Length: 138
Image: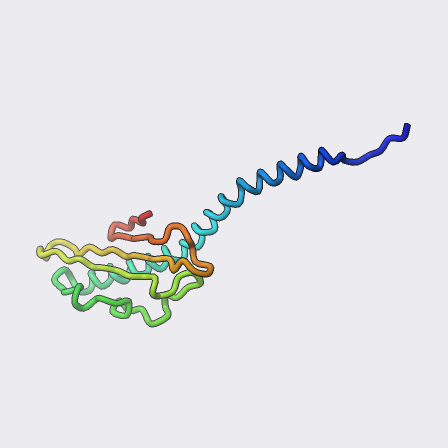
């Protein structure tokens, strides 16, 4: 009898089935990693805004009317287009500064980064915030 070498159709089908299961599991995991990497651009720019706000507070002191005079990124020293990136345009960044009636208390601030949700921008999460303590949420 002649011996034939090779794979049977059943063996090939089993291999294709296993590869399909692995792909179905791996693709969602990789998608989350891609969005996380894209958010690193937004978080880095938010950190730059945080540094500019902290410098403004240190320079002007606690009695300065930040809510009146520091309302845009230009007031913090950013030129138009400075924060434009591949995944986040300059319009994705916003901030609020809240002052206390007590001049001994430092102003608090919250920086919000919103994903445009279009093109190559990240889809999850859609909003990340950074507070004066340096905490990102989510």
